[in-house]
Image (cartoon, rainbow, N blue to C red; front, side, top):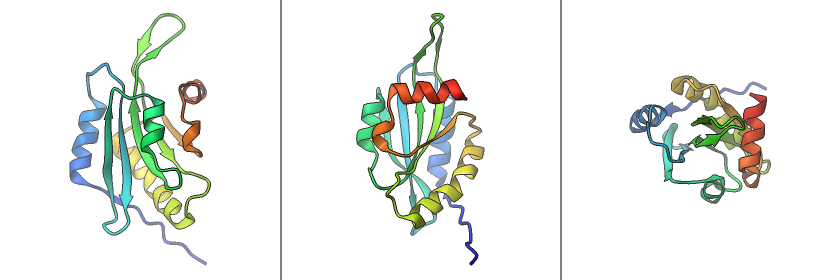
Length: 141
């Protein structure tokens, strides 16, 4: 049995928003939550969050459907330095529909490459997305 890997295109407006988000100068936490429109085979912006924290993102993500999100946040290091990492997270709940999960998984790499990101993580349960989870992922990276 052969499966065709479908790679969805990125909506042009979203491409521009991703570029602006990647080079933003703001010092507040922000996130872009993206979804795939199966009907259009397009990755689209679902929600944009400003001054947010992991709890806000948890509340915005569906519990049983995959999503991508880009999160830029203030990080204070133990030596006093402050950085603003940008992380790409693929939220892929354990109980989501396999077909939907495959569509997201198939399009993930092209989206990451398009954005030129290096800090990429996979999240299996929405409620696991916390400051501690993020710090642990960044420490491994």
